[in-house]
Each structure stands twice: as structure tokens, then as C-alpha cells.
Image (cartoon, rainbow, N blue to C red):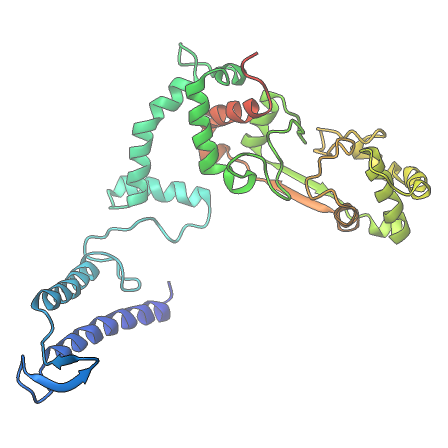
Length: 326
């Protein structure tokens, strides 16, 4: 935080405390010119106004909150860059990457700082670390269990579901059915393959999918024709003449999607024949994809979660489109 903003926050905070204290003092003084408990001479709807002071319990509570605020700001951070005399902090706000975050946590441990995030991370690892190891590894504790075996374990699937909700649901939704631009993980339509190890690789390493823009190569008429042909692949009713012309121009798309339009997991090219559309299946949405292209990014999670947790999440995700009771 810059010096300017540090001073700005400190001045506003201190001024607010002084202001509420002054307001309480002013409200506690009797300046009405009428003795306490006497009639003020005002009446409304049969109700007389009496000069009653603020309740003592209320005043004491108000003063208590002010004193508590002052003590808190002395002990803990709250006044700009001042960290408080205890040196407590929730986390290191200067980090800009996962590597810096890991280094900051290591420093907090070595320096025995009151870093709450580092402490909570230690507590979580101590509490749940053995659970993840027990689920992810075989009886010897040296080999990871096959993902398909973990998927047969109801307890493991419950743990995998919780990990999924904590880390994956923001994009793929809590029911894993995705949303516009984020794949549905329950329908079996896998861009990079739905085998257990393929799913693990996707989570571990992440994916970057690029669909180039074709407006420059196809032109406006070509986009219309290719769109008609692409929609016809999934049984949609289209202009037959446009679709026939689009079939000839689809050759530029076949390198990734295949001549039959069934896609290629090696490139993450989707199957165009199953009527499952990541960015929407309306004619305008398909045209927009061809005109502007698409860029999809799935981040890598190996450095964030580690292989043990990913093994469990992979089992849960794999189970969503596979009958684990077979």
C-alpha cells in the first residue's frame, strides 16, 4: 500500500473514532434547559415528551465499543501500513504468484510470524492430509490407487465431491453440468478424452484450446455456408444448397474436427455431430464461433492441489459420466 493510501485510511479511521466519541459526549450533556425527568412541553397524539437522558447501559456499551476499537487498532492491522504491535496478519498481501505465496508461507513458518493463512494451512494438512493419503494410495502407501478403483469407494467420492465444490464448481457449476464456455462433465462429451487418466492429465496440466477466426479465409458467405453444413451434421434442418457449398469449404475445419466432424481429442476439437455445444448451439452462436474463433483455458492444478487430491477429484469427475456400479 502506498504512503498516500496508508495515511488516507489511517486519518479516516481515527477521525471516525474521534467523531463518534464527540457525538456521544455531546448527546450525554443536558442542554435543553429543562431538568431531567421534567416535561419538555411537547405533545403529539397524546404522548408527552420528557427530558430523559441516554440510558446508562447504552452509553457504557457505546464507550466500550470505542475503547475496544482503539485497543484493536493498536494490537492488530487496521491503520494503513501499520501492522499492529502483535505483528498478526491474515496473509502476505504482497504476493503475486503461487510461487511467491509458497515462499511467503515458508518464511512465515521459519520466522514464526502470526500469519493466519499459514497456520490454517498447517492445521488443514494435519487434519486432512492422512485422509487424502489413505484414499489416494494403496495398502502399501507407495502406489496411487487406480482412479477407477477409487471411483468405487463411496467415501472417496464424497471427499472428491467436496474438493470439486471447493475448486472446480466456480466454472463447472456445483452439479458439474457447466455453463456457457465451460464443459458439462456429466454428459460424456469429452474434448480431450474421457478416460480416467486423460481426465487426470487435464486437471494436472490444464488445457489451452484455440479455435482460430475464419472470417478472413471464408468470407461472410463462406461463414453462412459452413454454419449450415456444421448444423446439418447434428441433424438440424438447414438450407440444403448452403450446406452443400459449406461441405466443400469445411476442408479447412477438417484438419482439427476430422472429415466426419467427430472431433479430435488430441487437439481438444469438439465433436460437431452430437448437438452438444460449448458456446451455444444457436445459428448465431455457431456463426460467432466461426467468425471470431474461441479461446478456452483450463488452469493447471498440480501445484495448487497436489497429485493426491487430484487423484481423488479425477475419480469423482470420472464417476459423473460412468456407472460405477457396473
